[in-house]
Amino acid sequence: MSLVLAVNQFIKQHQLEGRRFVVGLSGGVDSVVLLDALVKSQLPTAQIIAVHVNHGLSANAGQWQVFCQQLCAELSIDYQCEQVNVLPSKLGIEGEARLQRYQAFDRHLSADSVLVTAQHLNDQAETLLLALKRGSGVLGLAAMAPCNELKNGLHARPLLSITRHEIEQWATTHNLSWIEDESNQDQSFDRNYLRHHVINDLNERWPSFSQNVARTAALCQEAVSLADEVAKEDFSHQASTQQLELTALKTLSQARQNNLLRYWLRLNRVLLPSSKQLAEVSQQANSADDSKMKIVLGDKSIRRFQQRLYIVDESIDALSQQTIVEDISKQLTFDFSLGIVKFNEMANHHSFLFRKPNDESTVTIEFGLSGSIKAWPSSRDKRRTLKKLWQEFKVPPWERPLVPCLCVDGELVAAIGYWVENEWLGEPVDENTAAQILTLNWHKH
Image (tube, rainbow, N blue to C red; front, side):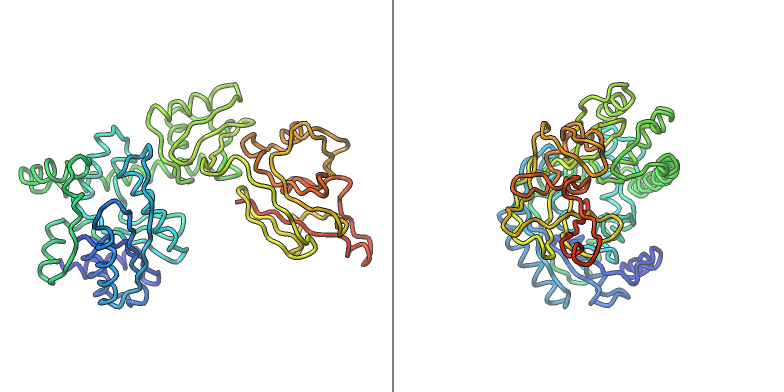
């Protein structure tokens, strides 16, 4: 089958016609053939942008970057390059490079775009065998889906039913040029070992091996879809995607608990846990003790507070810096770890109103205030310590040092997002008093 015909059929099948195509272009034969097929497809070239990620792992990385730039110039395709820094991590070099690559792609995606990558039938077989090696369940055996949702837009793999041989044949027939990544010969990488020592031998012994493996992956994808339908029903009563009520979880069978936990983690794009880690999450979730819990999964962690599980971004600094507010009467915006603070934008029913400080006062936004400080929220009848109030307002312990607190001359005015102090509450009575009232809005990330 013509690759252009296959790509056109894929675009139509998945209803991608009006989207902006962001092509992951490494410069290797697979991505070069993919870009060539897309340029020759029904898509206008104005809808296509190629993004090359320079990992800096090879001495030839600069040459690959130049090659991709020149190729896109010849094809009149918009080209962007992303430089990433791959540092050692628990994910290994392959895993960390992949994480950095997709984070780089994400910077070019939006709701109306589709990330297009060049994984093919042989890659699918390798992915499934690697999942078997890890002892993965149905989700792992489902390998790569032809099209799935991302945080921004979609991720499409139009060549997933095409063999490596067909791709190389297309490149030769159409006189395409490409680069060879020397790391593809490094058999210390699991995928390369499978490619050079296992997959070829299996396909020689059973010519339909890769196609049959792909069929198994497709059947597992159906099973995952069915499990997701059950998980969506179990999750439907949750108030927030980033929290999981333990009372709802405990009513389910162990299998449905595990299914819901995996679904919740995938929903929040968290690295999926091993069987041992999942068992630990389940054990601590079912415990009567609401004690300190922290299970790290990649750059996120699972924590527990007041009968809820939370997903916490581990990359956020433990403590933010003091910020001086120069003129609090103006429209101002500050972006902090937990969210965005806006002063004096149009008020709504979520806005906080407070009295304007004296012009000579020093206005700051502070973090990590001592839990022994006493405060008096306007919604309370008396003063209490911050430690007690954080508990009452259901602020998890790991968020408390990150809550921005508005202060005037060192005096607490508002715990932003939670309350305004009783003595600072703004209550406009007429035009004169309204001029002395300021607006505070909070938009949590």
